[in-house]
Length: 302
Image (cartoon, rainbow, N blue to C red):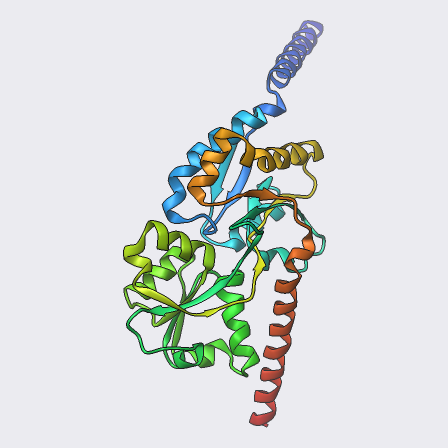
């Protein structure tokens, strides 16, 4: 009787192993979706293009591509670090920040008006009297994201080099987590000024003038590397190479060209990490200036 029970148990284990093995064999790695993170770098008006782009990339990659939208850059960076994303469209500021160990690789950079560059715009309401950022002292200011270059780092840099901390300069500041909403906040006078991505402001100027025309630019930054597309270290290099080649080829493919025209981008290019050295230098200069201000305040209190 005991022998019979043992034989039955062994038979059940064998059946489970065979069945489980066949299930794994039937489930190909290519069935798993490629996860691509997105944030406010995508214009709100262009969300309808995402399904088309997902379908286009899925066909080219011969594998499902799923866009994962999150509100902030920090959320996307955390997902990349944890391995929950394969690729992401981020910003130059989080890209240049030091990580140990590093978990990002630059994949490609969008080409906008012929170059992989853009600006930060400081904007105010069109009817306001403000001419410079200094005129916005004790006013309300809209920012996009704590890790945005154009929507946070640049205005912080402008103030720090003039010996001001943002929290002491503005009466109030707040994050919209969306460049388009920053433009709208200024247009509707919820904020006296704001800092935005030039690409998104110009896109809104062309496609949503009722909002953008209520604002005007009082400060234009130097050029910065356009928000990059990155891959996570540790994923299959062949997958990264394939995705990059698909993105680079979009400008010469009718389906890809149609999508790029909708985004008002020329295409995607092969740029070096040094493209973002200006942002890295600005971040370092800002950090040093804020440290100096903190030390000066501490000395004054003593």
